[in-house]
Each structure stands twice: as C-alpha cells, then as structure tokens.
Length: 208
Ligand code: 3PG
Image (cartoon, rainbow, N blue to C red; front, side, top):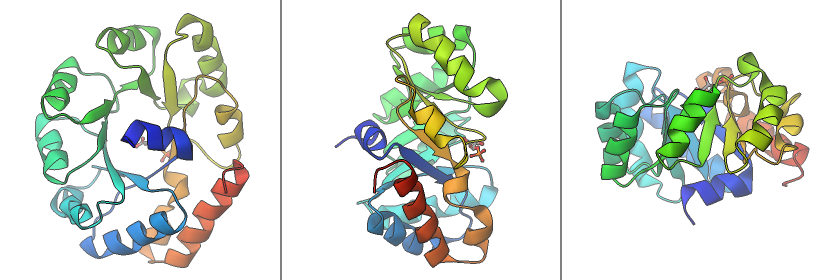
C-alpha cells in the first residue's frame, strides 16, 4: 500500500522531531504496536538530519519527512528511504525534484492561489497549514465546493478537541499533529505513555 493510502486508512498522521538515534526503535515499535505504521519526522533541528537514516532499519514504518524546504532535504529523505515528503508551502521546483526521485510529495497550502498552483502541478492531496490559524474547519468547508477534487491533511493546531470536526469533512483525508507524539514524552522517553496517547486518539476517531 502506498503512503497516501495508509494515511487515508489511519486518518492520523503523527509527527515529531527526533534528535536521537536511540529514540527511533522504541517509536517504531509503538507505531507498529498500535497499527499506525507511519510517522512524519520534521526537519526542525540540525541533529534530525544526522539521525533520520536510522529509520531504514524499520522498513515496516512508512517514513515521511516534513518541513522540507530545500533539495538537500529531499536528498536526505531519499537516502533515508522516506516514503513521502511534506513541505510547509508549495514550491514547483521542489515538487519537480521530489518527482525526479520518485518520492510522494504532499505540498503545504493555505490560500486558493496556492491550491490552484499545486493542483495544476498534479497534486490532489495537500497539507493545509497552519490549519487552525488559517481558518480551520470553516475555511476547509468553503474550499469543498470550489476545489471538489482536492483532499486536505490539516496540520498545525490539531488537538483531541478539534480532530473530529476536521475528520467529519468530506475533503479531509487525515489530520497531522505533533500532539499525537508529545515532545515532552519523547524527551522523557515515556514510551508507554506515548503508546497510550496514540491508542486513545485511535479510539477517539473510532479507528481502534
Ligand atoms: C507541522 O510541522 O506540520 C506543524 O507545525 C505541526 O503543528 P502542531 O505542532 O500544531 O501539530
């Protein structure tokens, strides 16, 4: 199954910024254990660039690399065998480069013009970012009839409180959230709590 189909199935895209190689194995174990076999690792820290290839040891987890802003980020993702890439905004140049490497890309958009550009470039699943600050559910409702062929993955400000209202929209494939893998729990290596958190989120959306 390709990455987009797995995201569609899980409806949850957990994301985090790992900085230690040692955290990769326990995180992958948990993701397998809760049947969410994918994760977005955001390139928000120089140290992440050094360790992301550790995911190669866990091919059962579809690796997404987020906060992609340069071609060298795409090279790093490619070397780490990433299955998909996410960009905060839309760049045709980066989209072409990802295509040349045969990696699925989910470009970020906020406005109608950006959606039109990404759609013209052939993208039909887009990250809606930053979701809550950009009008959230109301804005996506307004996009429904205008961009009827486009699906969104809202990200940015997604919590347990608003997840269901996003997933209730026909044009939402999944939600992306760092709240699914709280940074403080990674820091304290509280793996059991992370597992519980992911299980609770699955229950919340009726996907347990
Ligand atoms: C992203 O990297 O896509 C977002 O910044 C995540 O936003 P969140 O931390 O509010 O989930």
